[in-house]
View 1 (tube, rainbow, N blue to C red):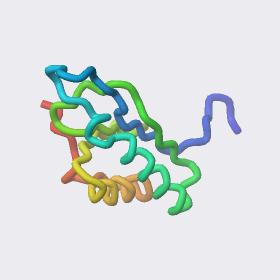
View 2: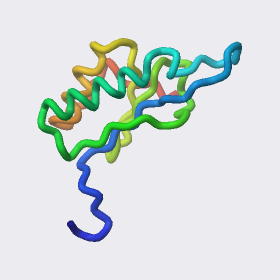
View 3: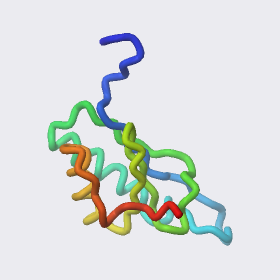
View 4: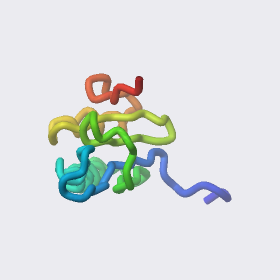
Length: 107
């Protein structure tokens, strides 16, 4: 492996941040983000995508738009509302085709 090459073609971070009860802002953890992360990781493995890394992250700061996910190296940001949103995100991981309907609005 060349120096600096970690062996992943894409790296996915799904917010796993949990805020205290009563916090003003919502949090991704309470929306099932860890379950989404596990499901996407398993789907990537089943699809034979051994060069994809899926993991939880700390707060990505867009929790008001839903469970937040970012795919690198493209820097594409997604929001996940339910497990069905993982299907087009998995397609992005396979082919590079951006899942337009799941894109986070970064205004």
